[in-house]
Image (tube, rainbow, N blue to C red; front, side):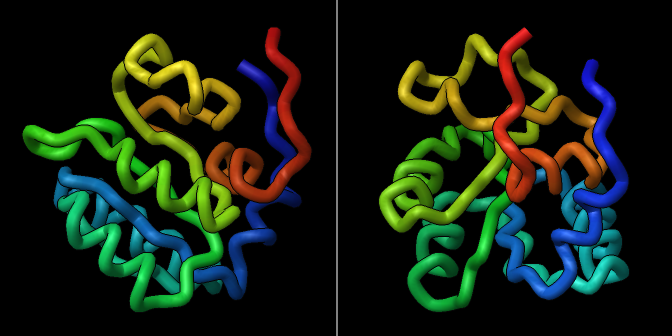
Length: 130
């Protein structure tokens, strides 16, 4: 595991962060932490369709995406964010093998995740593969 400098956490301040997560307690805890750091939380939402609608209707600077949402995968949301040039990270308890090849360049933060890792994945320099 790489060390993440705390300086990256300040990069969340002032950003509109879409949170797509189906575990209520984790989504709520993430919302509270992001708000405390000065970010505006879009959502959180546990549904792919609602996430796509929020991207169309709200300002979104970046996103944190759980991979599995009930019975659906989050990849349509990732595709839309990629098309719009909006940075995102995957947050999941699953390993990287579940992510389609086209998204392997995006950061995977294992749950439970630290916001420092999320911030680095969203706004920091690319991390070289080990």
